[in-house]
Image (cartoon, each protein chain N blue to C red):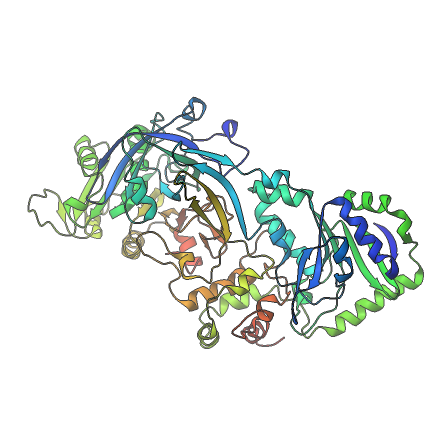
Length: 286
Length: 344
């Protein structure tokens, strides 16, 4: 997004971006597509890693961090999936196509996609966890030849609650990534995929992952991690290759404001991607 | 290092001369019990207290103010403007800083300058002048076990008390310039002064109520994460007021808020000191709180101050005693640490 060349002297200063597209993903979550206004910033839109996040700012309302949902391999725009849960998102949801917001970033360590090249990758998401992992999925689709087996397991409460459902159904059909979708319950009766919690999808990949050369990328509600990690450990995944991306309150994004500090590490600098070793070491992590 | 001696009767003149270098702040008595750094003009020079115990507010506030406008904005035009005040303001000359507080500022630097510089803090800090002063501990102090009772750097000048004045150590180029310009105030340091300094140190070290090195508290606290008594018993007393973090010389948490003006268009983006002792500190949108209980917040402060520092060799705690001295609930931080350690 902002490379060293265009980095401002004041790291809290934002760049103006225009909403070029938006649509509702679920009743409370919306997709936003943005483009920077200044050409010299827009030119660097793709300078980020999957798993990184950006700070949004609306003058008069405040700032809030959001995971980037697009992939740097498609660098013309940024995409986000944002749930309306507080005062900032209330104001954001009033914005329409052509309106502007401020953005600064990218922040966080993100996923080291290079180190995963040639390996098996299992991506597990639940609910809103699909937002940061969509970035990884699109990235992998674009660079599929660099990776070995790639599996995507995604869960939601009901078909209505599944974020990026159309995207993921299309992904399922494209078969570039082996996609398995599940819902906890299907009140409509029209759901053609799995029904059950996300861990029930593990039987579909059992025995098909090279445990010594595999990464797992997880994001979801806190309760999900415990059960997913249990499955992964059962499959003998290496602890350092179980990666999860976390959420914290954040005000600065650069290790100053202290809100995201967990056990002496800053989620905004050393995270939001942590591995299972970190989890075992840090009491408050999840 | 360069050393000069300032005789007691010249202190007044010295303070007056310091005003040439910026806005002078020094400790004065602000109430029956408390001292604080206040702006010193010609009239207040005689109020400066040289042997105060501790100031109410820590020196970090001169570089990282309690409340600071980062940007002003126009929400109608969707424009933001950087607040230039930190970059154009007069330098702060801070007189009478204790060694622990100088270490505290160094800890602040480690987070706000070293890796990811905060432009506002850095601008103020780089032009600021720090003049330290030697002190004797009271029962709240434990800077010795924090290795913060003596400083070798982090100041421009440092005044160490001898019988009839102060031996000044010069710690920076800025310090040299001040001494050069006020050379007529000083006399040569004698052997007697050097002996006095040693005697002062000996006296000081005997006054501490704890001894040794508390760096190992990192491990002791981590091992006692589930201490059966202390966390529950002590956090029960806590009022959650945040005094301990506001008076702490190394606490750096801040919140950022937008305040619109009444015209509905313009406003300011402000950063304000926050405290991990407040319930909202770990609260995220949607209502999940990562530190939902008073106990978890209470423990977090103890862990942060003792176990989370990686940037400098000491802990984030410098042993100034403020969090105990100013606690309205009478929670004794130092005593609690001794209890967790199982001895002094």
